Length: 383
Image: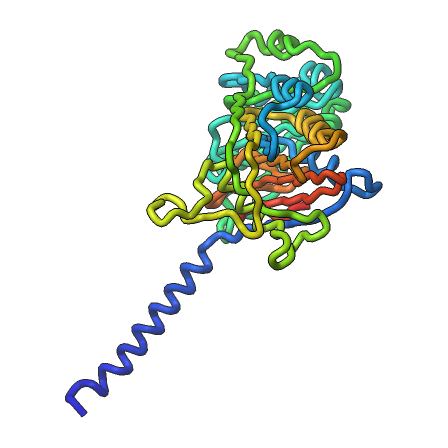
């Protein structure tokens, strides 16, 4: 046996073990993602579609895809063009959102939404107002302690708590303006720890004038904004074959919900789907079996989009099949703001390495639908 070889073998083994352990540690650091898929029918009495849309409050992007369609119907186009407005307010003091007049004017008389703009949920203080009147604050440790508010540690803080969550019920607060609780919170926001943020704001009330919010915040730098709309026609689009009753797909007969989800991501990213050997950007191709749509209408709306608007859009997409169509299905995808303190309802949301929380409807011609809900590492399982 050559000299030194006997000693070298154990060292090589230890090196291999160390490398394996290091690789396992790196794998543990990879953020997990959750995708929940379910199927139902819009006519079913226990269908959750409306509830899921209405409780996903802060929506950044809405996209829908209609295969075998070259031009949008007037009804769909009108809804798309009516997806705003929303408002941007610069350096708005937080105490304005707990003012009695604000609560009476907006919170109690409609659905009012607010979200801090250009704040990072994992680093900065962030605030969200929900349509149920809950004001959610995600505060760093120093701000939380200086403000003296009651809250709880963030469930995504890790071993050392650096973020805290404070929930304030504005409906309850406004009925007790003389209470010690209201006076303490008002004092904290006005004097002890004054906080200012850039806010996105929107208000939904049937028949309300949009200028109401403009006039209410006229003492601040406020802008009315409209969502950005991108409408395009995709030609010769490979589309997966789907069967509404086969959520998991069927070999050589239909693709699964997960395969469709991945395919939609590629379509919305404008990726090539043909897997050409000289394509160094994407090697993805449409799952099989598939068909080719001669034309497909793709529409994307970007801004601060209210659940009420999305619900109307979903209802109109359901009515798309009232008359016979070549398309066997259509999709509606909704992405939430990555730095919102909540995802669905009051479920705490974090960013970590992605911050995604989104859902997708696949609407079939028989009014069946697939619902896909996805969240990233710092989220509970979708509702």
